[in-house]
Length: 413
Ligand code: NAD
Image 1 (tube, rainbow, N blue to C red):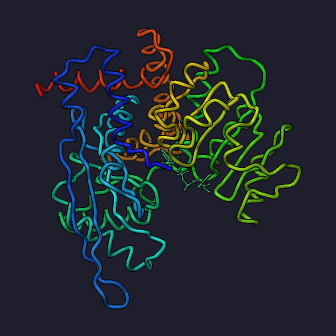
Image 2 (cartoon, rainbow, N blue to C red):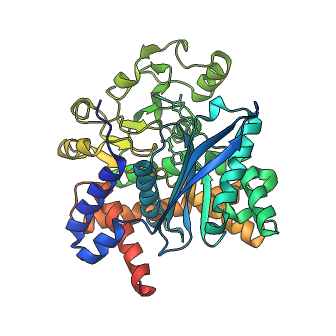
């Protein structure tokens, strides 16, 4: 399959929004380029004494609204176009959810599963040695992403703090609780996504219990499933990398979690039929939630989707080619930049707690997060209505670009 260039996709989405909002060409061309790209070579002493050099990136896309903010990904397929796209999408997402941040993203080309813990720690610390002058709590605030964990964030904060000579927890979010992490961060993205869905359903005035299928049962997918069940939705389909399960009668998410813990997979859960990940997307459900990987919905399967609402909890689960097909078919796509923005909104709450040194309970954090998600959903829906758009993605982009532009103008940029 041809690899879809994510930066090209991101720029097509931007151009589409720019056209609808009649954005001035000079602002569009500014938004098409990141402010700064850092590319570092990271030499690491391996356990066998050999030295290996890894490539590390940090893209600082736009900081009109505040410090650059976005995760760090450790993956063998990390490349510059991917990091640029993700950094751009972070600028959009942070503006949509209304936190005072710009957008950034970083990554290292590495398969962390091939490294020992010591090698991983040395790699993480060395990366910070090389970029520490370009990040900071009011400059650029990284966080975890694919294959990076709270433990890695803790090593990085420790390294940064040693280099600048003071404990600086606000330089990175997604830390363990013992090092200034926030209560509620674990469930934040799934919780936030469910608040968005609830608000969308409220606006549609739907009463009957809705059925839902979720692709991906990791951090985001399993919390989304739990909150969906709590909200009275019927979870009928679930999947992980090993395959999916389906029961039209619905299933108890907590029991499925226990099964997965014991068996290491969802497949075989009693009372369910097996489905492939491809077929899971085409199940006869009201709501479909891709919560695993990019480009799962494309031109070939967009025609076969039966759900009337798609909630994009993964980043970029819908290829650009599928959007017009879904729109034509009247399917509501809740875009990733809104649906999964609960993660970064809670990162913002972690950052404010670090800066003030005053910490909230989980209930307080989730209550504040809920308000961000309600406000962001209303703003995206209202923008889409104002511009008479059929899709929420373009509405979200117009909202974000307007907010970024407002900040750029106010700062005279
Ligand atoms: P995770 O690693 O915890 O879980 C990923 C899940 O996807 C696992 O259940 C895995 O088995 C499954 N999976 C892997 N390959 C699959 C395949 N081919 N088909 C179906 N399922 C497959 O990751 P996560 O943190 O839950 O993130 C999921 C998505 O949400 C990613 O796109 C991520 O970028 C996005 N996201 C996460 C957060 C967050 O706070 N964790 C925030 C915003 C966006």
